[in-house]
Length: 306
Picture 1 (tube, rainbow, N blue to C red):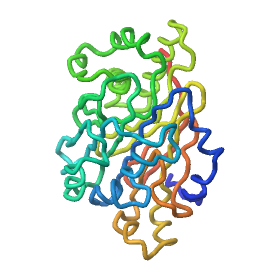
Picture 2 (picture 1 turned 45 degrees about the vertical axis):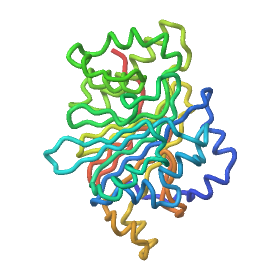
Picture 3 (picture 1 turned 135 degrees about the horizontal axis):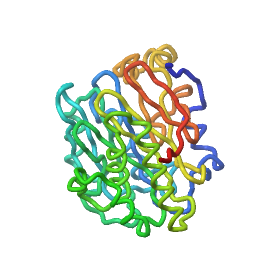
């Protein structure tokens, strides 16, 4: 199912105070991320050159609980189909890293993830910067496991012993990724992510932690993008997807960036990058998106219990 819709543009979203208030959850920190698949493009197109680029969001987030995200960043991208993904991560604020600007101008990729971090209770260090990597898989997360310090030990003990040595940092995000890998992310992504969510909520219930999980996540193996918007309290952080690029090319035939991406391009973003009516649609609460080439599907998402 290719998604074609004409929702309000980003300007309509940004001008609505009530829309912004929907994304203000109990904790103040909030990361921003994006994922792209389509014709190869330079990363600077979406990181720097778009009107509300990811770098602009790192300073002036419009739908985040905080406007500034300066606790590090990371990009992950794929080259040739048989290559493992590359990464560049740094603890510097994204807007102040000259190497990122140079790299984004040089790197051209058909699929990539970028993430800017707003830390919660874990250190600002490179191993805590997204995206996380295992084999061909990249993973990025916006949100938190509430009272993570209470749940961390029990959740860590659920990680496959073979994966345990690959834990490098101290974030809830990386632990969620290793749990999803434990439950079969590489074979069946959505059931594995649902099982991970179920395990977090089961563990939280034992520790009497209410509404433990708030997340938008992205996982990709270089062939497909799997994105999820879910929270235990049904008040998830913002997430949008692009509508049909073929349709957008018809609406905006003289826009060179839409033409460059190609008709089969697809993006998932924490905040819309450009103010074009018909370009973006909000991902519904409790929903997963799987994009594989021109095929884009939405599927209900919820915790899976053993």
